[in-house]
Image (cartoon, rainbow, N blue to C red; front, side, top):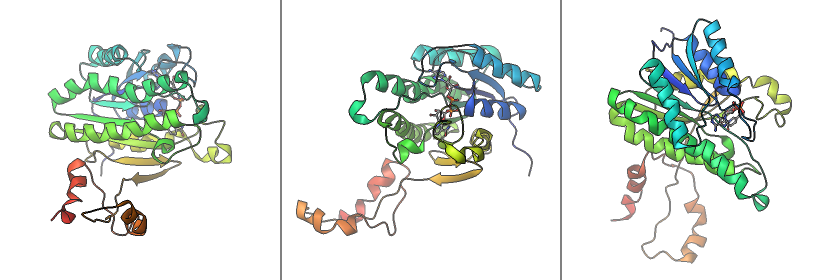
Length: 297
Ligand code: NAI
């Protein structure tokens, strides 16, 4: 089989001034994608800005013979999202791929969490993906082609201490992805989410010895595949890091039914309610509702 290539497709990669996003930009550019390198260039907590971060990666891409433009707008506002997409349209005339990767951290145990730790985290991760993708969406619908990859996290899907803000935003991106997969289906727009694990400035203080094995470049092959024309998957979640790729899915047990359900029924049938034997993996609301039907006769 031939290598995956992008044949002039245009990719916006947010937060691509460093870490994972930079790797995505470099590899996809080397495979022929035209890249908008977006990065606000702030610190891990989202403070500050520096347009040099995005420009530096554009220089790297150009030095390697690729094509890219820099954009330093924040994903956190609708105006920022629109400006990022305008950069793609002005430079390359279209947008085929959006990789929602920009992110910040403001960790704190839930009982100490304050609004200044919550709102910016939701704004960058969750609304950021919303803002950029929504501006790109009309172009994707019109051309009958699009690929959206959003960066979720195991911290949200599975939970992690001190990250109620981040976890809520990251699991929000799963819901976002599932709905876009459904709405994009008839326009050949595929939307998927990834939960990466990599040594970057965001994780360097917590990685320990495992960090040596977690080169961020080992996350990029999955993103590159999901961004390619060959990718048929949509509405799916993948875990990726250190060269390992796996699918994460949301399952539902067969369940217990009693037409006159009482609190005691719930207590007394807990083992049946939570028995994972023969679980289902619904891909949309209709699939899930169908699981009720055998009991509703
Ligand atoms: P990073 O800090 O190197 O990259 C994040 C980038 O987003 C930075 O370059 C930053 O300047 C940029 N950014 C922040 N706010 C922005 C805004 N408002 N607009 C535009 N750009 C903005 O960290 P890393 O690890 O590369 O993170 C990339 C994504 O992967 C993030 O969404 C992060 O939450 C996610 N992630 C990373 C994991 C890891 O193990 N490194 C684990 C799970 C998720």
